[in-house]
Amino acid sequence: MSASVSVRDNTDAARFEAWIGGELAGYAEYARTGSVVEYPHTEVRPDHEGEGIGGALARTALDDARERDLRVRASCPFISGWLERHPEYQDLRDR
Picture 1: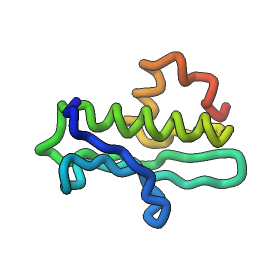
Picture 2: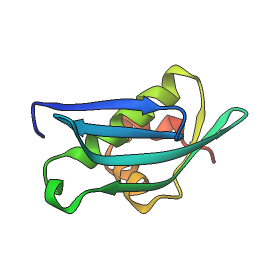
Picture 3: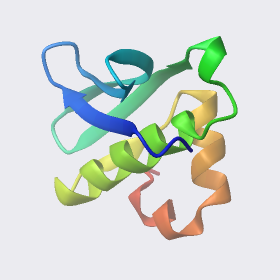
């Protein structure tokens, strides 16, 4: 992952955004309803693939869900796959 990546919550757009310098490198959309947050789509710009941007987005989004005490629905294939590879986040899944 690039040392200069910054992930922040853009609440107006309902998505976490990964920025490198002044450039948007990727985002993970979310929808919060009650005690559940759903992550329907994650996208990383092609010129930033393989830099760990998606993982940084997933980790930030799931850490945020944990802090808010939300259950997670990962309809996005990337977030779902990331969750599968990181057992320390399994307790967040909305079953």
